[in-house]
Amino acid sequence: MAFDWKVKVRASETDGLGHVSNISYFIYIEEARVELFRALDTMMDMKEWPFILASASCDYIQQAYFDDILHISTTVTHVGNSSFSLQHEISCERGIIAKGTSVVVHFNFDTQKSETLPDRWRDTLETT
Image 1: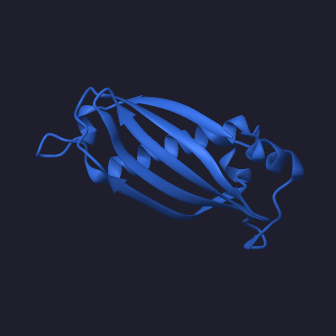
Image 2: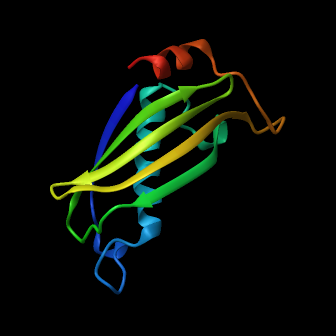
Image 3: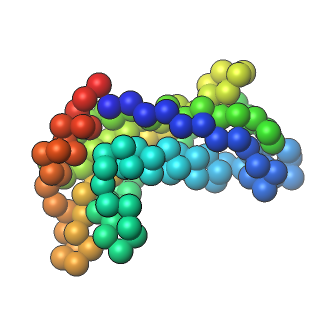
């Protein structure tokens, strides 16, 4: 499964050097990830939220600036029993800006344990 999302860099996301602050890239990746969850037709109510983020990383390739339109491409790279891995690529008209990865776990907050991914989600995630 692949998912694309766009975001326009806001002034508040830039730092004193005039480029996008490094933490903002994690926010952009989160926005894209949430839209992927929406595509899974999962529960979007925070009281019923079924996922936790187990891992996240980001490698910065070049700078982005205020008012840039960033394209975030998210691809499922692995589907496990209770988790799945994502690869994120952030680009703009100048090329690749950053690359990231994340691991998401299907999680039961009542029992505080991971749970097997439902077949309907697994089928969607495995679709390329």
